[in-house]
Length: 483
Image 1 (cartoon, rainbow, N blue to C red):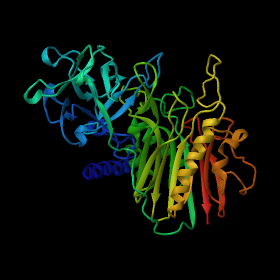
Image 2 (tube, rainbow, N blue to C red; image 1 turned 120 degrees about the horizontal axis):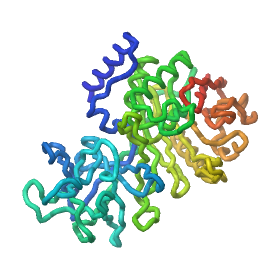
Image 3 (cartoon, rainbow, N blue to C red; image 1 turned 135 degrees about the horizontal axis):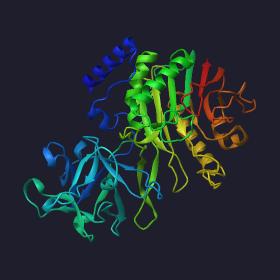
């Protein structure tokens, strides 16, 4: 990984010298999840054994899934994803992505004989062969039904040799070989408390936030919709450098696709200088069980729509760019409306500066779709109140560890409804307020509305500007805080 990073950094430097801004991404690098992603990871267990992807096998055996391991490593680790099914939406099916090779698990419906319907981690995009319905069983296990052929996944324990425990979508009923347990194996970031800060925050601090609108928003203002990772990375870093004219110490991003994260890190280093660390946290959907109910345990990461060139862009969510001296980070899932997007928050510490940064994207408020129907996830603001309180609780915990906190993001709340965010203001000041007790005002960040925020401690002097790089339907909000 270090050698790959050095090679990519060299490419970035050469690009800066020659004026070429697109960073090439190797096929293996493009397929895998960024190491900075906080998306939950899972292991699957059946009959006491963990499912492994046989990534060392060759040919049409490469990546085949077998229940044969007694411990969990990268071959036995998967993340859960859900993509949009036309007319149905997200959450109804899941797709498994293997941690070792970064590829999606496929039901090989085209294979015949004793390996018909075998599962392999080899898909580069999601479609019917990569989708599975989740069917809970009375004993707390789950059956997985392939969306491609409607049959349950079986572990073939009667097979011998290299196919023993082979997973196949081939059963019409559920028995012991079709009952799987999902075990969480991490993925939310650091679980221990953050390290103590080396200093108390002082001097001048510089923080920006920008909703990139880089998934599938069809607004003409969203110039990054369906854009591939390199286009997002070069466009965002270049426009930040041009709009701000200098390097901020932290940038909060919302509506970004996972696989743009590492290219963006390298482009920020090329365009703005210094070492950067860009972390990612996904937006989730609660998995809908086969009976139509929302599962109380399983959540799957929302998948970005494929790029215009047909490449997978990974999960949809938020990112946080800080100094590469960051030593602790963690992703959180905020309380969100049932059946809607489960919204994320993401925090990272920089002990050498005594600072912690927390980025969030709250649920959407009231708005009408093209048919005049309510389309917002949280039209009455009740969940945004809960989300703000949860974010404040996270921030308070990190401040209790001795850090000075800067937090905010796209909070989807206008100044007319700013009371939803009351808990965020207590003892803190928002970029755009002249004083802590001043009215909650500020330049619009989305159309004619201000819905993007940056908060910091009470006491320092604040500067705040809103600039429009022109890539998104949101503008950049930029705060300077001087102690």
